[in-house]
Length: 280
Image 1: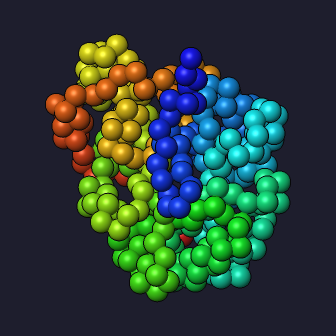
Image 2 (image 1 turned 180 degrees about the vertical axis):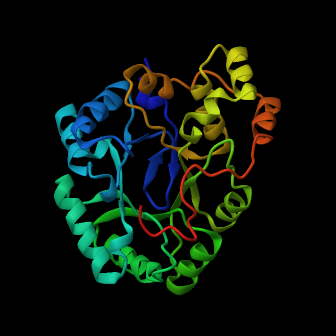
């Protein structure tokens, strides 16, 4: 019998590194709750956990993985370098600090959390990332919240293309131009806030599609992401929702239903503007 974890497709990040297409995010999960929540996710079958230095819960993510009894290489772990740690030396120090909190000798994926163009240090940060990958501290490297200008600059200045760009992406912010650029450059698209912080779950179009499949609206939106080819990292602290969000591999949206959701795009962000964001 195929387990839930075995049903999750993987996407290549180049070379031998693959990322589970469906993961579990821990943004805004309080550190005191993180170990328990991640333990529930791992028990449900998730094998991809997305954290960040800025979330303050890296150590608790690692605690849950160790307690699960799963071997380290069975769980794909992403963490991120935050805005105050941009620059070549600062980024390397930030990686060392993340590894110390995690208790790992390497991470599977390391991301620049935001470009912070106002500081104009993201290209130097990317150079550090390239070096850290060569040193074996990260199996793959990528970026988050990068706009086309930021992507093209790091590629032009280093010759190294980010494996992935983790961006806000949901039915109300579908970012088609950026996704097309990703496809052109060979960058994997990863969606954060994939449910529009819950707003999409009440959309009449999505509710209607959910009824047609006898599924929850959340399952429909996650299935939409998967069929688009996105890596998707929904977050929940509710055990039932954690389980529901991974039970999306036994149904498929029709082309008509995919078009209906495509029609919901209105360019509406739930988070900051990557061109101007510096700090919370």
